[in-house]
Every structure is written in C-alpha cells, then in structure tokens.
Amino acid sequence: MPKTLTPAGTLYRGREGQWSWVAHRITGVVIFFFLLVHVLDTSLVRVSPEAYDAVIASYKNPIMGLGELGLVAAIVFHAFNGIRLILVDFWKQGPKYHRQMLWGVVGLWALVMIAFSIRHLTHVFGG
Amino acid sequence: MATPIIESPRSGRVAPGYSRSTPSRSNFEMIAWLFMRISGAILVVLIFVHLYVNLVAGDGISGIDFGFVAGKWASPFWQIWDLTMLWLAMLHGTNGIRVIINDYADKNSTRMWLKGVLYTSTVVIVVLGTLVIFTFDPCPVIDGVAHVADYCPTP
Image 1: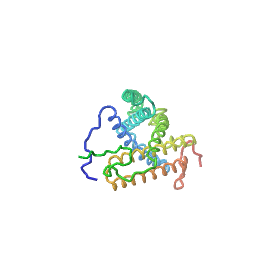
Image 2: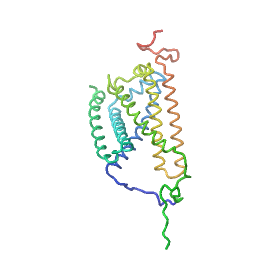
Image 3: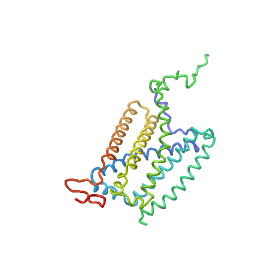
Image 4: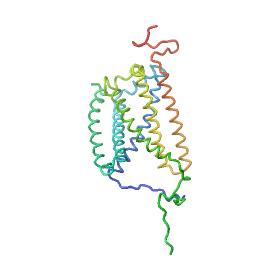
C-alpha cells in the first residue's frame, strides 16, 4: 500500500458533528489513563492504610484539586455526549436533532460543572 | 476507452489497496459497537453516583482516606458496585482505545504492538482491582502491628 495515501491534516466536515466527535475521543482517552492510575492508587489500600493515606494526602493540594475538576468536566461531557450518541443511533429523530442535542449537552454540562465547581473548590481551597 | 467499474463499498470486492487485512465475516465489530452503547448507559449511572458519594456528599474529597474506603467496602453493595464499574469501565475504555489505535496506527506491526500493550494493561488492572475489592481487610495486621481505627477490634 503506497505511503502517499496517508491523509494529513484533513478536515472532514467540521462543525458540531466533528468537533463533538473530537472532544469525545480526547475526553475518552484522558478518562482511560486516569482510570489506570485510579485503580493503581486505590490498590494501595491492600498494601497498608498508611500507604493509601500518604498517596491521598499528596493529592490534597490546589493543583490536583484543579486536575480533579478537569477530570470531572471530561467525565460529565463524555457521559452527556455519549447519551446524545445513543440517541443519534437509536432514536428515529436523533440524526435530525443531533446539533440541537449537542447544545443541550453543552448547556447541561455547564450547569452541572458550575454546581460541582462550587462544591469541589470549597473543599480544595479549604472552605 | 473502457469505463472503469467501481464496486459498491459493501460488495466485498474492494480494491486490495484499500483493505488492511483479510475481510472477516465475524460480527465482532457490531457486538463491540453495541457494547459501547449498553455499557456507556450503565456507566453514566454507576459513575455519577460514585462521583456524588465520593466528591459531593459529606465532606467531599476532603473526607477520603483509608477509613472512607473501609466504610464503603464493609458493604457488599459497594463492593459489587465498584466491581461492576471496574469491569465495565475498563472494557469500555479498552475498546475505545482499540478503535483509536485502529484509526491512527497504519502499520500492521505498530497496531499489533500498541494493542498488545493495551490488552496487557487491561488484564493487569482488571485482575488487580478485582483482587483488591475482594481481599480488602479494613483492620490489617502488618508486621505484627494491628491497624488502629474505631471500627477495628482492640487487641
């Protein structure tokens, strides 16, 4: 197969459909790598209570707190956009309203994230 | 000049240059596609409750320590919850990464290596997580020293 067939830097159709697909991929990869680390650090409960508490204590700082906020933002987007994807695939009117549903996803995501940010940042920055 | 014949994309007679490997008649990809939707819908519920209980309710993330985990896994309900979440999330994530590798790695050997690393990591994480959930001891005795907590028996 000739190497010249590799498409580089092509834009399929842009707009909501492609950008939500890109965002779904990126958030999915981020969540997957977090999950690997999350299982590994939680496994420290099997080593000793001190080992687990030590690694959890090392997460209790503003940088990790903001990282957690970003992670939750990724999860909430991936979840809502995933539901939209299921509706596009299985609901008869899904493909017709995919764009409107994406704005619904973004709106719901913003609402959930505002509420969660207030709660989480209060803990992180010592409320 | 003869008119070139362009076969329908689903005819199975695609020009060899456009097919990466021998065509397969298995419906694995359809099952994988369906699994992503079913597991995804279940994971939304499992993970949202997980995030609410661990990060929003009570003291939020400030309340997380060994005792918090011990409190949750004292109940078979949360053991099964976390076990289901572990398996579904790992399989959902692994299949997602598999699709991404297939999309972007165009050398057969690169795809094989990346997927080898992926599947190995998945097996290690799923087995490790499962063992941790079921062999967890809230009051371990390490090197003859018993863990001190208000829920542990005093020696």
